Image 1: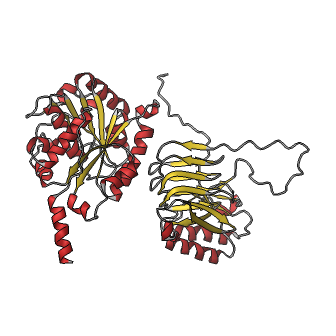
Image 2: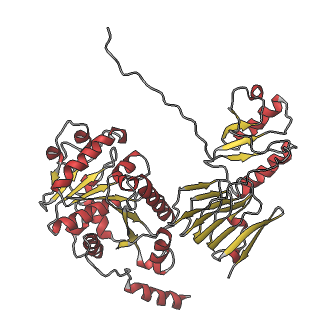
Image 3: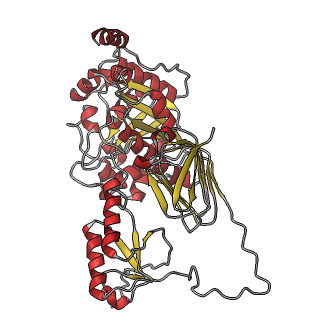
Length: 229
Length: 271
């Protein structure tokens, strides 16, 4: 018999996705106390987020490591994978992740005589309102939005974020490591603002800054916001 | 050739089905050939609001799956002979809607009608996405409250990215229909104002339908409010919205209530 039956075909492809990388610190108990504090202030912080745990540089025994995973899942933090762990420590519970390219070599190489100039950072311009549920990710530079950013929308940029409208959603500037990134908006009503991993949620924004035109930047670890008239 | 309109909102219970029936009837009363399609497979209601629930033999799923012809499934309205209903199936689920089948139904309906109005289910899943996919124009129904407005904003984002028109790089026309607007509560600041909603959604306003017991009553007796009680404020607001949809210039006034000012005066005196 040679009747051809359509065989089920599988399709595979590689892809890179955006995930929130969380790096636990020693002592773990104190670190979890901080996490609990964060969850008390903003209970939905990790809701619906893909979270990657970065344990590179931490020396954890296998039981301590599995305990860490248990504690995280108790807090409903869904872990997509673990970076920098010994795969045998994971017990097959979560995948071990490897970065596509090493981001920062541990040992700096001697600069070549003629170092190639870094490519100029490109900026992204969005000429329309960003709607609830939309996620804009720009890993190369600034993002400028001519319009509002709705509640439930999220902008992630390597550089600064400029919103010529009301900022109601979440914005993460300098998200790939840039302390000098800033956030500008014509009217501040944000759910969350972050620069280089430091963040501030709506409840922590001083009332006099609400509905005002502002800029935000980092001074050391401190989040600074001032109005711009 | 018909204009394909999707009536959508994201959130449930804001008035999509009521608005589909009222606008469809208002357009048909002016002589336009109108087909209204219920995409809420498994939770159909448009047949009830149109008063045709006892006349459904074949439905959208039968046509999509090829077990009935369109002409068998289209139910002609008893009051207006240019108004037709394509009901949803109540016993199936939204997975029964195939992409190809829905595309074929819309393509086959286009030449015979002026308007095809797709009543979207709530949510952003398969039923909603198929209802909006072939639309030339969207009517986004919202109530003046934050959760409804945010869901509408989400739907506008999907209209701009997932519809066939958007995928061809064309802009899909979007209009806001603000329903269940209560002038008294808006006057007291208990609801979002019209300006607040427009500021968030940034799309043109098609109409403001005041909260009215006439709407509920019309639904209960199985008749679109524009037919059941054409003199009511809600019906007149739908009639105006239908004319704007046809491209006519109809001045839009924010509904106010004489008792608002009166109530405010009384309230102030009591305070």
